[in-house]
Image (cartoon, rainbow, N blue to C red; front, side, top):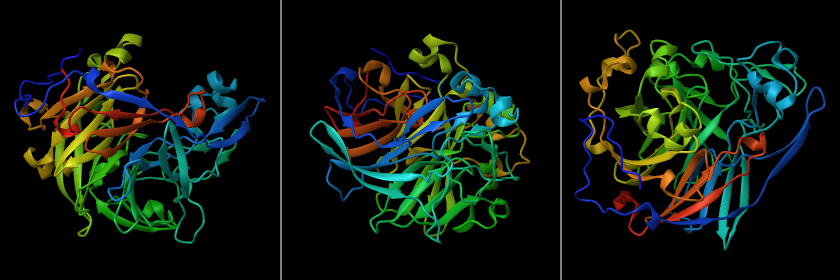
Length: 435
């Protein structure tokens, strides 16, 4: 069995007050997931791909719902890296993207991100409701890219290789929570930003880094510059993927998916320092910022066995509040996923100077031994269990003993299926520790 990993001597492991067990004690139950066919798309050159909705970019169980009911969210929609066009479509980037290998192909450019309500019924995971995101006007939102100047962006191309205009109404949705009044909060990667949604999926407000509002002129929602400007230093496609909320619904918590490109991309590539934020909903401002230290790539055993991995392959894809400010954090590459317990109440806040872009060295380039990263305790490692999906991005806490995991299948671009499993623990999840 895998022993849990010490990243630095200052990150001591407090296990004396918690249960210990073997991961084999966790029961894994797989479900037959109702498929949501999208369409079969024909690309330039004649290649056809049958797409289905990628339902698993985030997940949440609402506390007042039955234990077998939960929600998931899609991301921006099916997309293909222009650099992968020849391998997947038989057409190179010159044919599909005007030679721009750094941009994306969107086979279904009219797709609007979806929130999906599910029910576990026997061995089946059944769709109860689909909620498409719209703007204030009622028109569908988009998953296409924003024309950002405060940070970098990428161009969008169609299935026929045609350039598609930027849109302020594009969201790369990832995490979600539901409130008692029926509203949702979601996180997204383009900004990175967070957004408030009505129960019917209407985007009411998008909270973005300071200085970004001008780039979103004409958006079909209210733009609020309530997040620190430093968030705009996110690496492209590594924005805010995780989102959770306090039990009293006063505070949102979210993590950057990766270290910021601060002051440059080299920092993102080599740093292990990831920022976690606490956002007060009523005051519309960040009230806490914390340092989370990523593990080293060689400790993600199944991924590293396939090929040598880099530090920037590691990301945070999900967080859920278990109790008070104790949270479960999903840290992964693809095949290996680690689930860590953190406690923000016991963590030291980051010095405010690190939100200033002029600070040298930046937080990302500062030696973590000179800082105070939070303690994290390994709850379990996916390598120690059979039947878990790769690229898990959604966790829903059904009750204090059970978690629902769902993967992101990238809309079936490469033929991967959606996978959904329930984990039943012999103790409360918050008390469980693998050994």
